[in-house]
Image (cartoon, rainbow, N blue to C red):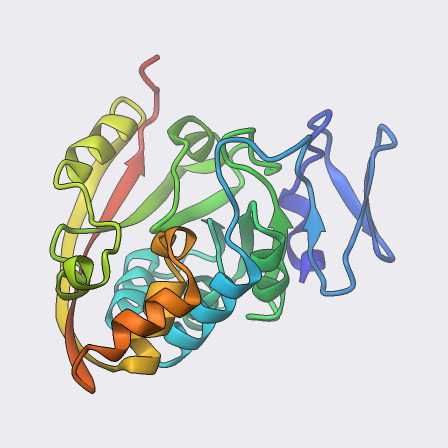
Length: 278
């Protein structure tokens, strides 16, 4: 709930600390933000920036697929990387699946940030210790400097400057990125968006000077999916924005009843560099 994390939140307009009074988040300078009936609050200053939020349909598909356990090895790797750190921020929290898994292990508290209101609604219900916030990492996180023990980014955007700012001096950043083999069996067949083979280099470049790599773990395995699971997998990702439900179902109907699909990701753990290069 928001009450669990309000002490690490700040006003997006003035940067002052905030309090939670009834169903309102307010700062000392008079800025107020209503808490939605689903339990999340929007601390988005102005309109959304670079990132287009996931739709309600995408979040529903993600919830269905992840709740089926198909990405359980990925979730387990994230949980292991976080360890026993107790104040966690997930950027691009989506349905809240990964953050909830972390909090189940640590017994800690989590801030789930997403630019999508549909995601914020779902994340607010994913675990009692999640405080769900609408915000855009590219416009600045409404989070106190040095207040977070671990930040997780699972298939989500990373603003290295902001992530470093909010982390404690010995805090860690955990980034999950797909490899070129991820879902390779479906990319050509269904016309999905593939993974850039240069993604790893670009990740390193984006974090250079602000974070140091501590550990890099590969997670790769085969999933056996029926048509319903394939539909959810496609509908929850970026390819959903470039296809229609009817066209996806038509393409999926031509697949075998059970499809073997590769899951292939890299889980990188990074230490916050004491002094950041400009």
